Amino acid sequence: MTTHRQHLVYGHVTNHDCLAFIDARIAAGEAAEIRALATARTWGEARQVQMTHLSHPAGPDCYEPEDGYGDDEPFDITEVGAVVEGYWPPMVTTRALDVLPQDLRNRYGKLVLTVHTGKYLEVPLACETELVAELRGRGYEVTRDDELINLLDGFSLGSLAS
Image (cartoon, rainbow, N blue to C red; front, side, top):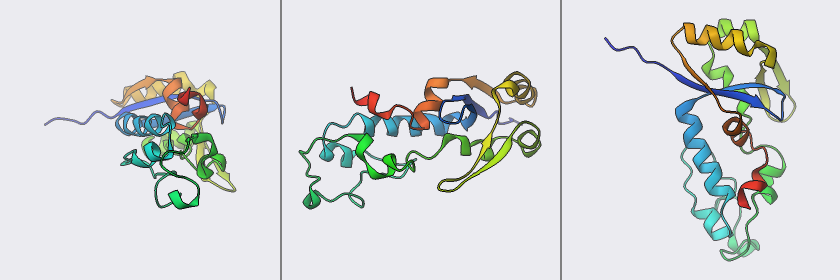
């Protein structure tokens, strides 16, 4: 019988100054979509980005060409409403609620409720060594990648287009 080994990616998320954890496969798919949208040069290119992991904040359901967002108009991800308002991409710190075992969430994290974007798990940086050791002891593969975690949280999206 083969056991499934879950691979988690984690890192220091700048916007919340804590650790965030996410399933590695989900992280890779979401990161590709964020990069593709952030590097679109025109609204037409942005609308063509295929989203399977995330909602599409610049898709045809949100912005119509006849409303001034024509296919040839310059696109800047930092001007998209959902990005400006902090709803897209979703906070990466929420993912720990799905991937960390309940007992570890209780021991190392603190549930934080936000007014606009719901709840997330705040895991202090000081808990990193002990929490990662416990996860590995339970058979998790755990990799630290601060750059990926911050991309998934939407930190410095505008710099991707440069």
